[in-house]
Image (cartoon, rainbow, N blue to C red; front, side, top):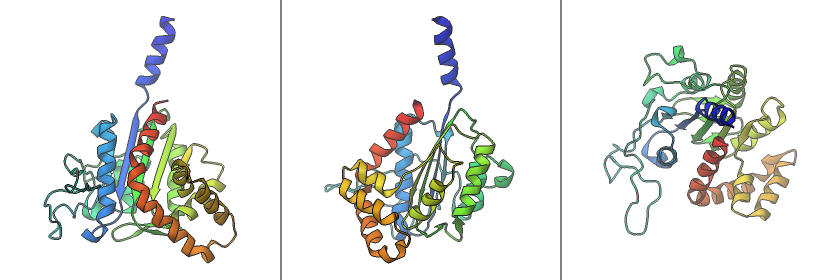
Length: 265
C-alpha cells in the first residue's frame, strides 16, 4: 500500500498545469478582449494556478488609455452599484505591444525560447508529455484565421503548431478555448477532421449552448454546420454569436472551473 501511495504522489508531482492567455486586439474600442483575458488570469490564479505557469499576451493599452474613466483599472463584469472588480490588478503580462504576434504565440506554444529571445519575459511553455495545457484566445476572426494587432494567424499555421507540440510531447491534455466568431466553425471543422488531435478539445458554440441547457439552439447550430455551404446562414451565425457574447460572462467561471477539474484528474 505504501508503495502504491508513493507512486501516486510521484505521478502527481510530475504533472503540471500550464496556461497561455492571449488577447489578439488593441485599442480601447476592443476593451472586452483584454478584459476577458485579465479575468481569465484572475480565475486561474484563484483556482490554484501559480503565476509562473501562466503566460499572458496583451497589448496593454486600455488601462492607461485616455478614454478609460478609471485610470489603471480594467473591469470585466460591472455591477449595478459600481464598475465591478478590477481584473487588471496583479496581472503579470509577458508579451505586450508589438510583441503580441502570431510568431511569438506559436513560439511560446512550441517551447522555442530562441524565437522570443529579447522579447518580453522570454517565457515559453516548458511542459512535458505528462502536463496539461489550457489556451485561451480572445479577439476577432474570419473563416480560417484569427486576428492579431497588426497581422493574422491562419488555421493551417495553428494546426502545424499543434502537430509540433504533439511531436515534442508538450502535453497530456490540451484545452483550447477560442473566443471569436466565424473562425470557430472553420478551425474546429479542420481539427475534427484530423485524427491527429484526439486530446485537443475546442469549445465550440454548441458546447457552450449545451452547458447552458439551450439544447434546441445547440441542435439548430449543429444542423446548420452540417450543411455544405454555411455562408448562406451568416445571419444565423451572427445571431448565435451575439447570444453567446451576451451569456459568455455568466459561464466563464463554470468553464474554467471545469477545465481545472479535468486537468487535475
